[in-house]
Length: 65
Image (cartoon, rainbow, N blue to C red; front, side, top):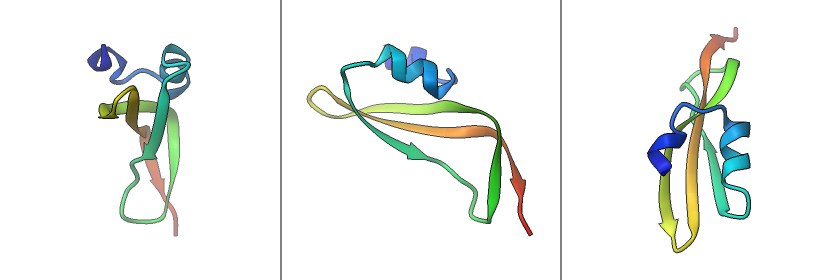
């Protein structure tokens, strides 16, 4: 089921995972930037029994400075 969450909007994925212990990590570029577009699920993995880690990222990033 976790593979079906890939590329879904983060809000929709969290709704589908209601009641599941979840850690959220945001992937970002190595320079100052603003996320542009939709925050999407990039990866979901099981980290413990009944707990998941979800990595998310934006469609695009706008460099600052």
